[in-house]
Amino acid sequence: MSSCKIIVSVVLLAVISVAAVCGEETASAVHLRFSGILGQSQPAESEPLSEIGVEGAFTNQDGTLYLVAGGAVYNAVRHQESGAWQVERKSELPAVARHCEWDGAAAYVLGVDSAIYRFAPGSEAATSKVETICKLETRPSAMAIVPITQQNSGIGNCGKILILHGNNIIGFTEFGQPCGKLFTLPSDIKGAWNSIGIDPESGDLLAGAGYPDRIVRRFSVNGDEVKNKRWPMRVTCEMMQTTPTETWICHGLFGFHSVCGGTNSPNKNEIAFIKNYWTHRATAITRLSDGSVCIASSQGAVFFDRDGKPLSQRIGGITGIRQMAVATDGTLLAVCEDSHRVLRLSISDKPNAQLTCNSYEPWYVGGGWKGGSGGLVWARTEFLVLDRVQNKLWRFHPTKTGWAETPWQSLTKENTFTAPSALAAGDTNIWVLDGSTLSEISCQNYEITNTFPLPQWRDSTATKFIAASNDRQLFVASEKSLMAIDHSPEGDYAERWTYDGGFTAISALACSDAYVVVVDSSENQLFLLNTETGAVEASTDLLQIAESMQAGCVALYRNWIFLHDQTGKRILRYKIESVKSSQ
Image (cartoon, rainbow, N blue to C red; front, side):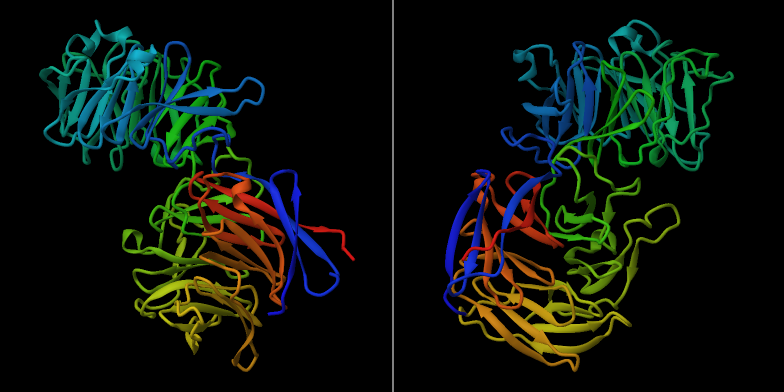
């Protein structure tokens, strides 16, 4: 390449733009403007949330919202002016939570280790102390906590902590002393009892079952079943959440409603049905002091108004993103969690916007836990995913994930490739980096039509990244070098240019028809190169946005760049903007 003179200017104290001038003048110039954050609800000055999902949520006696996520307890404070939530880590749990309930004075957590933990978030001293009150010998099906309002009535006279083991209800005191078996649920259902709760008016026990029974039944303290106009309830039940004022029933994919007591009043105090479109795999639900509702789920803590209308607010981060791709409608897909899970966002989202995945999220790569994504691209009309475990290609439809729909469609046979590691898509061709060879695949039949042995790099490192936006040009990169390769209609490949003088540790690559984006993680720089000439047209110092940033994968869509910040558990958005030419 010809030598380039670099002109540096600071824009809005957040972005450095660099115009590459080859010769005396440049016909045009661009700069990169930082344009916001996706996927992380925490403000930049706060510790980022490291979890996508939330396992527990409850509101204490003074109206403070508490969240349990990733083995930690947080309290969430809403800013009065902006309405945004800010979260502060309060306590550490010995294990990740399965279920969490608030009795009006203390919180109880059932861990994945089958231990029960207790803490009372009423004061700083109490908040910082998490007690392990008992360790169950076998994994229980469910847990319910008797609220303090019912501890001297109904089943509260028998035990504080209720554990469901098969058909048996086992009781414990508030500090974990065993009370023995309280009674046995009927065995006349086809499936299994999966959840229990407390009727907040009578103190009776509620027991629920999912498919095929789809029922919630109510039992008095002596074990007799209560039957009237309301009970039993013919609803699918996957989870219950007992609070001092109401008990919530989760209907799985279909939503929630509250049971507020009242033997003959089916609609007494019940809110409008909450459709959990953004909250599949819900683990907790709580009502806030203003009547709105927070649902803890695999997608974070998501908020609804008192009538069940989504508020488009979420508490959570995004971590472990391996690949990103953007569709022509602005849908951004991110592959995360060890390349198994796919999340969907919009490129115009605010930082605390709820994810736009539907109720069947998370979407596991093709073969479920057997698969793992090694590449994700938007191929004109569809998303394509490279499976690095089964060595094949999949088509993914993020809008076809409903009941009886097929989001994943296999495009090639298993082990079509040997060691696939990267994926690129043009107009009618797809390229797979397979070991040291580039495999060219037709979009017509998804068969390999050509193979191209990649050149030896001067730095003696292997090719790690490939990118394309059309059939005419392909970009390949090693750790320190970038090459543009022309692809003729006849299928021939020829080097156009190579840039090997300025990179230290290339960690991500993306392109459009006009630009190539290169992330150099060692130099904490993002470079924008001209696809025709290889000239550096702009760059930005990533540490201008966050001093501790660690750059991850990158995606390019029109004049927008999306970069995963691994430290901040978020996606940074930049815009490519034109500036006046210099003479």
